[in-house]
Length: 426
Ligand code: AMP
Ligand code: GLY
Image (cartoon, rainbow, N blue to C red; front, side, top):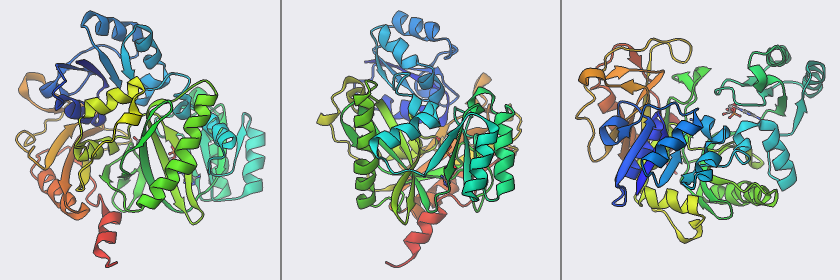
């Protein structure tokens, strides 16, 4: 099979790495790819927002299967355009990608399907939103409706902060994404991510993972795309996973099918485990980054079989096997991320680190003239397996310490919640 992966992050390197292991993978392209994917696949320098160019490339190169990594092309309808050209595609339709593209859409779906989520109001004017904030009180959560590169959510601990955030949204801080605002009750609990492959009807739950969204140790500082992750997340017990599947994922999938917009691809549910049970925080229509990296390292089944069954609608026949080992990834980012950072610094000491229990996935890197250079905010994902999260963590940090990149940094406490649980006698 000839396969094209769309994207250039650590998630796409991990997907490409897993697909490349399949005996059925004849030829692998990554568009546009990065310094890591270039070593295992052919990078293709085409602008992925130009759907005609992407489809043209796929047809000209006899691509059999397109795998969409990031949210933006999914929400922009690349999946529809690829399928319209008669090519198999992993990724949702534009209509189903609204689950990530619009928070108001998802809240409505939750209402219709009876999915537990925070109580909310939806507003398209500032006065109404401000009145609602004052009525509900703090803490309260303000969300710009559309995609805002992870920056459209404010968890306001005071009414003043909530009011400022409402004014920011309506003054255009998030462009059109902020012209509709969802305001919801603050949920107290521990967060975890669950991933479900969906073929429109059937669902296959993947293991849980936990991200670290804040930039600094101790979960402080601004939100990022994710500074590290581990899998499994102990908070997601098998019992809790079954509740999420039955109370959240399956009702949502059924309702999407009833609406005539079945969801296919991977549904990423952000869950808050509250005293009253699991509640949906949000859906994304793609793998998490860096959560995908830890899932791919634990996956023992053929990734291509799994992605293909999702795209073909034959998921009910597959049962993926994951290692019982834990996996943990540490993100190395350019100093100044997520605010402002420089590109182009040289990274040494990465080649040769990969081994049986360790893979360095690349995110923002490129390799002109054989040198490895930083090319983004999040740059490398040092990912390890271990019998416990603590062992995976020690292995990952031992490798991090061999990387020579003065212009980069990482959190030193990835996995702290799970490790604290492991240390506690049960
Ligand atoms: P989202 O982009 O919707 O995932 O929100 C970003 C982050 O804000 C989440 O990962 C949570 O940590 C937090 N958050 C979102 N909604 C809520 C809520 N209703 N209650 C508490 N925290 C929330
Ligand atoms: N790591 C969180 C995300 O991919 O949205």
